[in-house]
Each structure stands twice: as C-alpha cells, then as structure tokens.
Length: 175
Image (cartoon, rainbow, N blue to C red; front, side, top):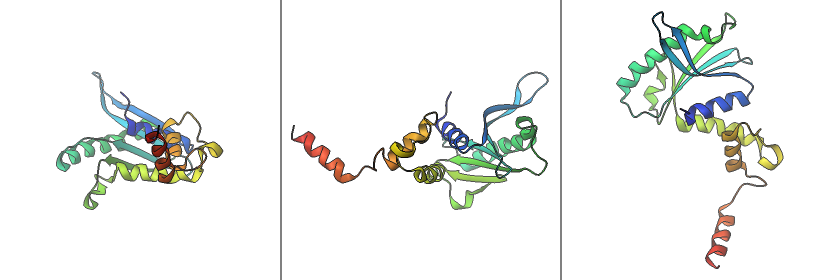
C-alpha cells in the first residue's frame, strides 16, 4: 500500500539525482521471511551518504517508538550493504525517523535523528520554491507531488493572492 510520506521522500530524492530504494526486505531467513524492511533508502553520490528514512504517522507513546525504531535502525545498519552492495568503505549512514511532531529532547533518536512531518515538508518546499513558477520552470511531471507543491507555492504564472481570491468570491456571489 502506498504511503504518502514515502512517496514524497522518494520523489524528492530521485528529483535531486539520488539512487532511491523503497520498501526493501532485508535479512532473508533460512526458514522464510525477513529480518525487516527498510522504508526508504537513498544513496547520495554527491555527499557519499546513505539516508535511511522511516516515516510514520503512528500515535504511539515514545517508549514504544524507541523500541520499534531501535530495531528498525539496527536492521538498517546491519543490512545496508545488502541494499547497496557497491557502497564505498567510507560511506556515511544517516537514519531519520519522521513523526507528526518531535519534541526538542527527542531530536537525537536511537542513534539517528527524528524530525517532524512539517520539518520534512518545509525542507522540501524550500528547494521547490527555488524553481519558481510552474509555467516557467516546471518540475518534471513524474514527480507529481513535487510539481503540485510547486504549483501551490509558486503558482503557474504567479503565486495566488488573497486579493485575487476575494475578487473571485465577489464575482461568484454576484451571479
């Protein structure tokens, strides 16, 4: 089943030219099954970094999350070379959990970091905004979530304004 956060992360990093893998089962067991699944794994050749994202919209308590994500991050560390066997010896692994909100004291999380959904979206929107208007410099159509963000942030010809919306509402009321 598709996950909108995974979709957004995958599109963003693919758009940036990174190698992206999604929902990778790792640690094949002799009697069947796997040790785990890595939600989104990215290799950024420009920085020689591997990013391992585990986004979630769960409402679990932090103690439960800590146990769950310790396991997820440990599995990621153990099997990351199964995902990208050609990694150079000096690669860096950064693990990122994404939650609804993250208190300051939880930002360092299980050997990685935790960020809020809003922080993730904000980071992506900053780069999308640099592209400018869709009509002049559209993000390629295969990145539909990013292009929609570009349309909302920058507009097609120009960003929308509340004055323009007020004018449209006035016309509609007068019909």
